Length: 472
Image (cartoon, rainbow, N blue to C red; front, side, top):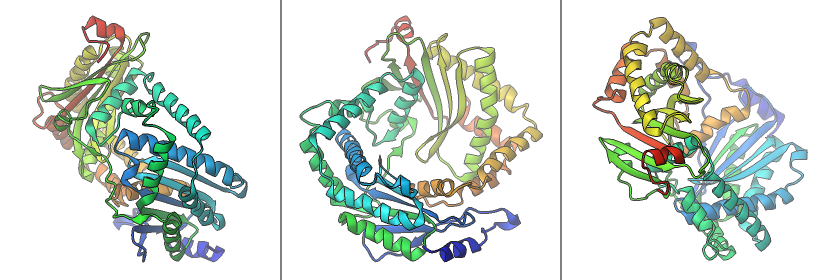
């Protein structure tokens, strides 16, 4: 793209909503003559810099869904990165960078930097994938590094374990790190021959989803996307060929057939319960995540949740940490799992067991409803809503900041470009009665629509005191 294209793209002022509120810039979907390709373009806008980025998601079901696919895809990406590190060693000196990675929807590629170099650099990535040759020595090295990383997951703190088990239970399909570790440690299954076969699967077919952002014209973006697909040479797939994991409500999650190797799961009193024990016998802390699930929300519903969580977070910290002194880590906020939302309270404690922490959280919820919500003034609510909405409407300070939410919408195939603007608008309209209604409907102990999931991770001492087997 020329300097003229920078000027042309920068000339158009940002669109505005009624009332003068600035909208987010939206990418343009470009018609492509190639099957299995979808191209998006967004110019430089007000940044007016000779820089660009090219992001590509190769959607393929071969990348995830089973332990075999997850492990071998990760190894393939690491070995590709290894190869590119040598072939493209001079790229940083020329003001450009690149990356490759694995995503539940496929393989992700990115190139960024000065616009005259980006598209050429980005096209080197599919070429390298198409011609990648595997080496036994490098394979063994990266396999050992992956094994070490997976084993280290066992040593994460109890709060991380509690959150991980909840995410695993409520998302499908997902692969537990223990299942990935078991496959990666199997010499017969995780072999160079298996990786070669898997690499052929990754390269065989896919849907190319591309975003060209910055100093590039629409025609250049369209041509780049088609050339990227041509360089790989994969058979075209449909855009929905690699669906992303879905979030299950707690009751359904409790019945999913895939069991965690580290946590017991059961349904009790309408709530999904998870129980695990820390791997390290010397760990003094236990932890809990108590999650109250809502599901996928419309902007007004999410605005209510965000406002309620913001008000509740300060109250939870004061009550559970400052007054009751349950632990240094006390958090309350919105929990996102895929497109679903809910309210989570998290505590890591060396002075109370997980069952005691759960009791304290339930007591705090009742106190918060009786005092914190009832005492909420209109001025404080307005100040909280203004702060949250202002953060959402903060303009991006770089091309990368602008691209990040857009790329997320493209990957998720939701395409809600004005999501933050819509949410900011709703935040300023929510009233106190709506927050009380939300709490009473979904979060109170006897709420008619309550969907509770609780993940408890025990220290060995707390497990022994409560008769919980240390080997789940």
